[in-house]
Length: 252
Ligand SMILES: Nc1ncnc2c1ncn2[C@@H]1O[C@H](COP(=O)(O)OP(=O)(O)OP(=O)(O)O)[C@@H](O)[C@H]1O
Image (cartoon, rainbow, N blue to C red; front, side):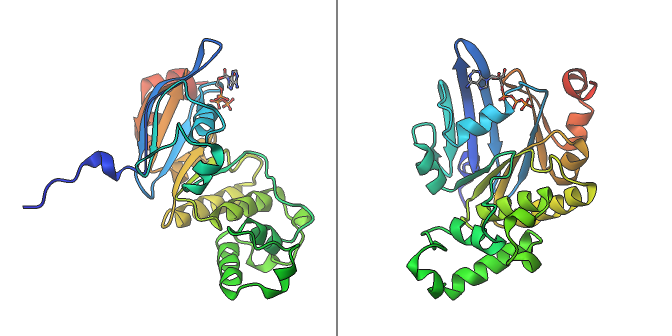
């Protein structure tokens, strides 16, 4: 008979007992949660709950005071930021930071690992495989017809998608997004939901979001944070009907 597989080994990310204190104030306080491969998890919660700090801790921008973050079996709390990126964790911040003067194609190209620089002498010798990958990513982010446009001409929403594309081309296993639909139109929000669903074939996605409609559209599971801790966790229906969540967050 086949031995039962240890469940803990199957998690893509296991956050356990994670704590960070800023001058004695615990922004994240004994937090534990677990991500399955290829799920979309959304973290919600009131302002100051510690959501952004959790992403900062996972990507190594902030050092944990205690606790553990295991990603594909590797402990991230001891690693430097660039090592965490190399291990397969990608993060997009709230404000888009694309290169305005470069085209969509060039923005994706400079993000391609192994530095296929547009400025470099080898620029004319673009590898066909790289071009194909850039085109595939551009299709995923709805910008296949805009490859030669300078990023400065894109709408705010298109810039957000381009930045997601710049992450996708690096093939991180875990993609973390901080309020990806902030400032987007309703149509752009719907398309972003489609985009995130498509990318879970290859990636696991951890999102911070306030827009509950969008959360409902994308989340496999929702983790509700309050005062640095998990207040509630489960399906969108579960957390929406949890009296604790209504009291501290949804009821406001
Ligand atoms: N580097 C820091 N030094 C001191 N305090 C900090 C630091 N980073 C975050 N905090 C504090 O930790 C708490 C949690 O902040 P965080 O930004 O993680 O909350 P959040 O849930 O992302 O809130 P929002 O929804 O407003 O973005 C806040 O009280 C914040 O002021």
